[in-house]
Image (tube, rainbow, N blue to C red; front, side, top):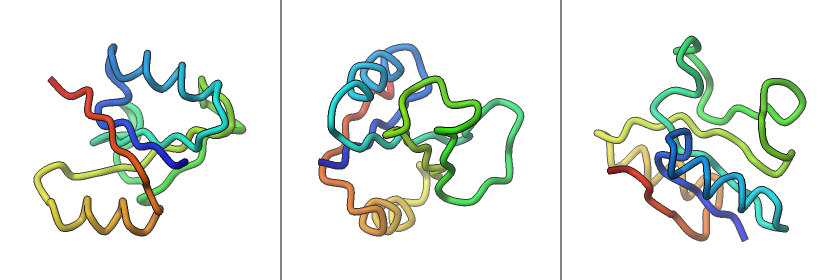
Length: 88
């Protein structure tokens, strides 16, 4: 199963991502920015070998929450089955 966590870089979201990363699921973190310092990244970034604090089944997807069509396209392109929102 491919699971996306919106707000996955925040406090509650990180808890979900950490727990899900220990399962067989492929986990995607939906975030406006992948880190506080990197601003221009491709839509999908795999940090499993470098700065990634989770296991290798976690990938980051940069999203613009104001553009619904781009979110839909991103989810479809990555074949996301489930989205968990931790945005408050």
